[in-house]
Length: 393
Image 1 (tube, helix red, strand yellow):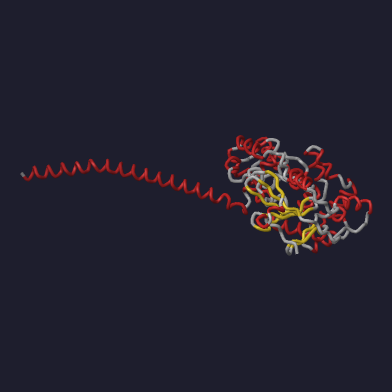
Image 2 (cartoon, rainbow, N blue to C red):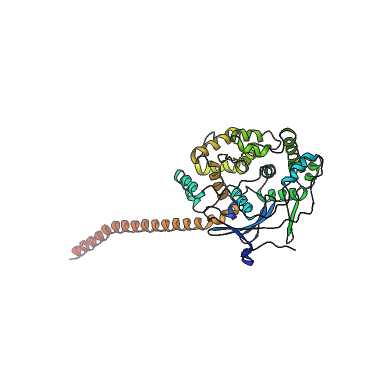
């Protein structure tokens, strides 16, 4: 049985790209909630599916290392040929790829958008935003992925009233139920993401409800069907070539896709770096850390609040506002608070030291003042003694 690759056990089998950790941190980027298909399979090693291939990634200070597994697709979970023309197109896209080092290197560069110089952006954001500058020293290397639009859209339809670990489980079950099997490593089977045709099949809603998707099952099936019936296979990819607001509004016509989900897809799959997804979590960040007060009486996240917060951050951070927003979102996740812990402890210690020094100074001043007050009493006592002696004489 094939096993998950580990860099220390066979480094010669791995390929690499020059990439500093300041430009990409795998542990933050792959686990911050923008993708749900990567797992840490051993310390510092992340395994997942991207572009019809199974990868394990790891990194050293200045190098991104990757291992690509040979696919052993056995035909399991292939969609039924209800529409031969449509299926032929999709199967042509999902044929097990022939290993090609140059192609795989380019896939990684594109997926991590390594042409974007993250260090330069961090400096720009830090110069414009003192709060970001404090966070940036700890949360370096958080960058946006350029995901497959179909995978990104249907993964984020699963996020409604959900949390990251549960979403990961849902997406995994979705792929196991409807996606093509790629390979098995140790006891884990890896599947490609389902095609639109697989998702649009008439029995999908019932199957997904049985798998615990609840009301999201209907949204997944209906959105896939609407795309195929109304727009066609290439529609989602084509949204990369239109303006941000046009792409967002187009996505919002799909069942189960609101403004936040549409913004996530725009930012993480459709090249709209200015998109700022706003949920209650981001709203709290805006109010707590940026004293955002527009329409402060509003208790629910309305379209206006969403738009106002997005515009606020776009004005502050510029054309890559969505990227900057993701750094703050990442820094606020509970799973990463241990990274802030050392800094928080250091700051607390400094504050305690300053408090201690302040107390010492205060006590010294009080003592000095007390001594000054006592001196006249001592003199009075001395004078009193002298006067008594004078009377005795």
